[in-house]
Image 1 (cartoon, rainbow, N blue to C red):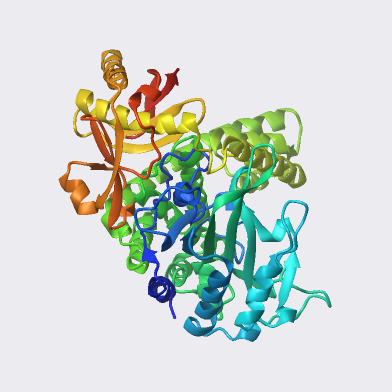
Image 2: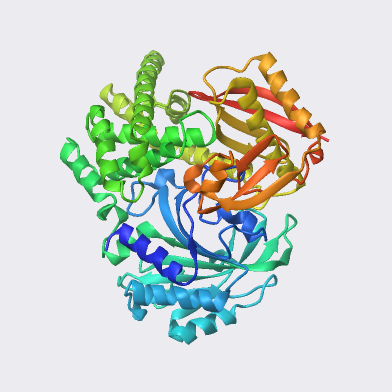
Length: 585
């Protein structure tokens, strides 16, 4: 069974249980400041988990493209991925623990034919915030799970929340026994020894965690589940790693054929980072020096560096992209549609990186001359790190060149500096994006509504070619990216600002309607990410001024927005401009 077959089995099974199949949201979240990329299936559904009505109903199922950046430096081992696919089913105030557990067990044992003896499950042990989840344990016993295969663990293992506040609750996790020998007498699913692999997580969202750490009961109980496709695909095929499955195998074999200096870790990095980069670009991402653009730049440059380590000509990148698209086109047809864009972005970034390496080598020569003049035979770690941080010069290249010239490199110091740098980066990202997916309050809802007014005003002033290319909203400001070939003039910005404020002063009502996607298009509604919509969509109309397909939420009247003020206009990436603005009340 291939990954595409597992995905189709999953969607069709839950469709037979009354779920509506909804499309995957883009990797780049719309109006969500809490994350760089969509990292879980629940991200696009947060408003509905908090009680807003979903146009497709209370039972939903989907596959969601996800990207997580914390473990980029770990990619190359036998299990870490940045891009992955998550299968999910959702109950928005409909069924809860019993039916969720029953369906999961049935899908695993009947649809995927996994023997019960291969499965173990975990449930929440309980603490001062929430009771022991004996209810879920009883439902597992009822469907046929042996009692000695049911384990209780605390919040670290069996409680799920996105961010520091928001909807959350106990979960029950399902594990697959790989057949490896137990690491000890106490070996269980919490071990990291490799015997047990988590395959599915059902979150029972019945609590809300507030900013001050208090847990309150949600009015609407939800079920949010996630099953990792690459992982279950690997296990069902009896493979050791995702790189041994049909998703990666063709490109892994091609890299081995092309490599003059073969290295399994480098081949995995190239295969994984190429796929992830292609998926980000297909969903509108572009390399830059900040935020998600920097992540894409890192992925492409790390891939390029490891192609060089494999001694594969960079002229082969074009061929590798073609191969990957051919392998993945059934799962992700958008790659075919965006083929030329993917190629141009990756090849342009590769060329920039090669120039970076040339500049870094010049700086390296200066450091060698300096060391010689000071009668040193070592290049210290700070110098290696500076060459990396300032010029993007890879530390292993510095080490190699230094050895060629008879110099040693302090590897321990380098490792220490890089670990410190990674920890700072990780903490910085967590701090920047810690707001939580449920951070939808009066201020952020007002900013979200203002993006609609800004979008239409930009079309009026600059032309109909303007399209939203992304947005980011916090409690302090809004950021709006849009397609436009040149800098917006001061006069044009003043006109845009004037138009937005005019609509606010007109006190326009904001109306929401549900209709089919075709009806929405026929009515003149703008769709920002048409590939993410289902058959029924929400259309928000702001008076006689703006009409957009959007998930919401919005204010009920523009008079709630205050005064709109543009603070900055700048380039975001090639052909994309960025406006930062505030609302003053």
